[in-house]
Image: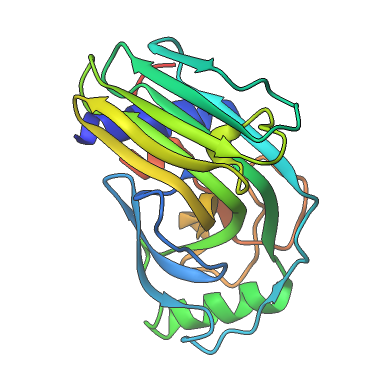
Length: 249
């Protein structure tokens, strides 16, 4: 199972540059503090719990997001015509040809971030010096909130599922994550991880962590890959989510 999760998270990160939440329905909040292990963010505290003041941005513009794995997936819609006003009933067949192949559909996706500030950075460094902040802790500093999302991941190479989709509105381009479409599984085979038409998910996120070189010093460094001074943080990459066991691109 871990191989399938790693495949999903690696390919999602390659496509969109963010970590895929695991399990897909887990709720992460901005300012959560914890550890990354085996593809999961494991919460230990929050900035609020630690008394560290912080600010959140407003939510960004809404967008729809569709990502499928590199090969190994076939999606066929029979019956309904996308974009037409019906009522309509359609069959959506999803066939997987390899383990770890996936389909990710999300609508009304909005990004929100933790605003980095010198005061927040200083408070975290002070907490570290007071032995109230562990060296391996990281912070959730961005989340993508999805109004509706469906995630399907194959656990074996011959998995498949067929949905009956019904709606009285346009079927749309992402019927698996359309909140106006009712989905019913009519048949399935093999093993699948399924999150079907779930509301208000946080399927994508990113993390930052104190840079090692600043643990012992009072100065503030730079965010890796950024020209912005005044931050002791580095942004974590997919290798940090899984350690050395990441897949090749």
